[in-house]
Image 1 (cartoon, helix red, strand yellow):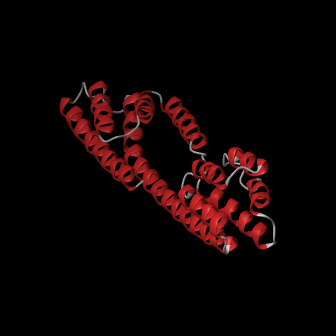
Image 2 (image 1 turned 135 degrees about the vertical axis):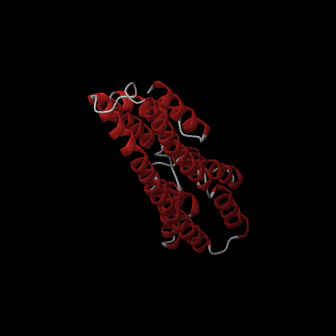
Image 3 (image 1 turned 30 degrees about the horizontal axis):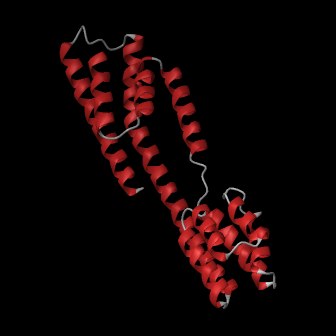
Amino acid sequence: MAVTLAVLGALGLAGGVPLAAVGAGMVMAWQPVLGIVGLGVWAARNRQAGQLPGPDDEAAFFQGLAAELAAGSPPRAALVSAASRAPMLNLRHAVRFAAAGLDSVRVAGALREALPTHGRLAAAAWTLNATAGGPAAALFEVLAVRAADDGALIRERRALTAQARASAWVVAGLPIALLAGLFGTGRLSIASDPALGLVVAVGIALQAAGVAVVWTMLRRAT
């Protein structure tokens, strides 16, 4: 059993499966309840760590900025007001520069740093409006639509990859959990049938290889 777990862990690491997931899987083979708890904690921590500003936050900011500009607010006042619609974005420098009346280049630079996806476009739109005038509200409305579309694509990709991960873990995890239960209750014994150990090792190795391939494909997709 120890050799089987070692093969499983090595194949998982070679395929790019995170070390925490490999460790939790090996623990699950020995203590299923403890392994499930470990996987739950790991997934919760990853989800919390992944809550970073993205296109949806930028879309909310751009929509607010376009609405303020369309209502006739000055660009600097519109920026200060729109920043409150996207609290996840670090817009404090841009807000402070705009409120202080600094030149458009400083404000544009702060926007470029604060917006991880569309910062360069937002900075260019801000500079263009400050130097040449023009329909600033329309520019930021276009950016809002673009950011919203990017956010929709990211959500769709996350949903599809989550389904693929769940399917891979279910398909590979159920046989391993069943074998662990049979060995743990004594219904199967490698000592009584040495050939059984080889069959189990090959089967688990193939399962691990399949999970590793799926995980590698998902990492490339993201």
